[in-house]
Image 1 (cartoon, rainbow, N blue to C red):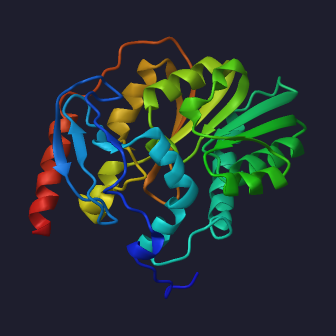
Image 2: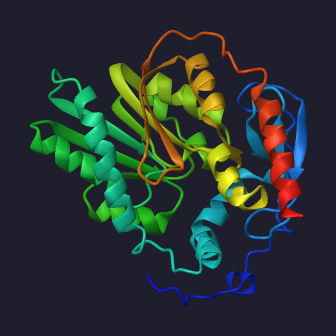
Length: 307
């Protein structure tokens, strides 16, 4: 990939200042109203305000754009903005190779947990982009003798067009706006997407409601603690991640929403932690009381070093 690709924020035409914004008064994960602002800039240099929840350690943007603002953002500005930051062209064509490698690694890990008693598997890939991950799963499952029905939901019509050409069912839009629980799925994938959601709690509840018994749910998080250690506070934050998780926040949250962690893996790029889940009884979330204070100390340390 070319290293001399160079565009400016002006070239992209994204005016963050003029976007309609909303305040987030409570943590979407633990419900706490106690938070502390940790940064007023993101990695793109935009005036994005990020807060650390003092109840569970979730890092979230507030204020943030509305659902409508993010819908337009993902359709027009998201890939160009990433290209600007990385100084590399990132678009539908360039992301496919990386997605395919990721998908193969993911399927190789999850394959052993599949139930052999199912003849037909229905897969939902939430935030599935071009459908590369879904297609790899479908092809590998069919090679094992399964009949597969695969669906991708994503807000980008351009990326969904690629998925549709691969023979996948597509649903355009944000998952929070779609009634995915009206159907039943055997495998739900939330790959590199949970950080992008507008309402994590609503989405996870809907996913659990949409799963059949003995179904599997996969989700991975960008481990925010890992990223902030490597890149510092500002470069760990971005407008396209309304939420930022750590393992110590994600696992109690999922368990509290009725999931059991079947298996964990640090994926090969290092900053992603994968969690393979099954339905279980709901129970109260048990967030570590000292985790938020630990993260706050880390934030202050990294901010001091950057001055």
